[in-house]
Amino acid sequence: MSRLRNLDPRTDVLPFVLATVGEFAALFFWLHYLDQGRFILANAILWAGFALERGAVLVWIRYVYRDRAGGVGAGGGGPSSGSFLRTLAGVFVITLTEILIWILWVAIADGKIGWPTLSAGAAFGVAAVVLFVLMQVQHSVEMAGLKGNVVTAYLVDRTTLFFTFMEVAGAVGWLWLVRADQPVAGAICLLVGLSIEHVIQGSQLRPDDGR
Image 1: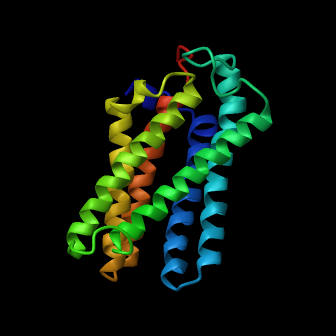
Image 2: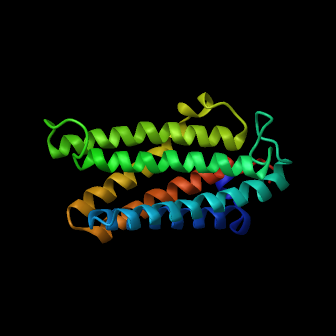
């Protein structure tokens, strides 16, 4: 909790507000246009929103993080080590994998892929489990890369599990409500889940600087 109390609004909170807005807009409008069959526009928006999210975090880890932690993570690597192009390539790969996870999740939830014998509710439940497992792996890889640590340090970490759960819970509630013709309530659910996820994840990424 001390990490949350010591967050600086300008250098710690603002980048993650931008990240939340970027991911929220990406997912919300992606699904909106996907349901209309406008696949190119939907996926362009998805990429643009995630680019904003990752861009905000990338700036934060290369400048704010570097200033406080000297560019060295817990395992000696850290987010500021290596060239900018190498970092950008890593961000591209991790963004691509997350986008594929979201696409897979919606496809399973909507019964477009998976087991034909499953009911709509069962398919939705299976999709939620798949999203949680894959997103936990995704977050563990991200945290390990940004903190210069090993992936296994985060796979069963309670904090990582919690902010993954919050993101997944918000997303599942969002999709459920959208499918029930309640898009506004769904949007609120998604925004709350993403906000909690990013605040907690940001506090974990923030280096200790004695404050």
